[in-house]
Length: 153
Image (cartoon, rainbow, N blue to C red; front, side, top):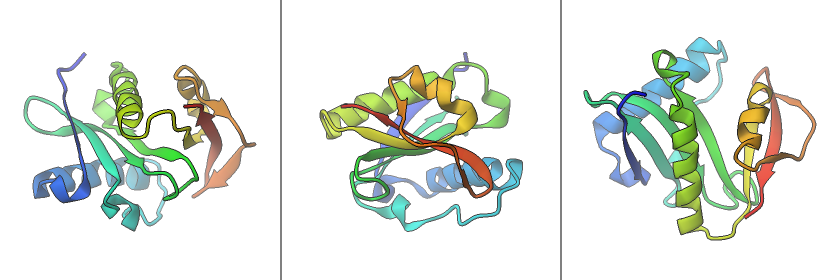
């Protein structure tokens, strides 16, 4: 696996290069690669309790990212979203490490809170491996099949 240096920051603590890198990665994957024009940049990123978890390679390039939203911002529960790995870095276990780090952070910040996600359907088994359970039927979000899942705190 690639050596990854992990960091987690609020929006105000992100440096300009970090912010550019994480937004570029999100747009490259969610808008361009998935051919899904939608408003990728939203005000949830700037919420004072939102946490941005990202991993950089030895050259400082962001290869992995997710954001953690506080309870009530998207769902009633804490929410993990915008989970993304750079295309040429997939299949190396980076997402497993990143989700574990997110769950550890959530447990520190919001102990015993349930976590809800809106997962792409094809990733259902992946999230089930972390204790998430489907709580909705499949629905389309921006033209992509999703399913709501919850992990009990």
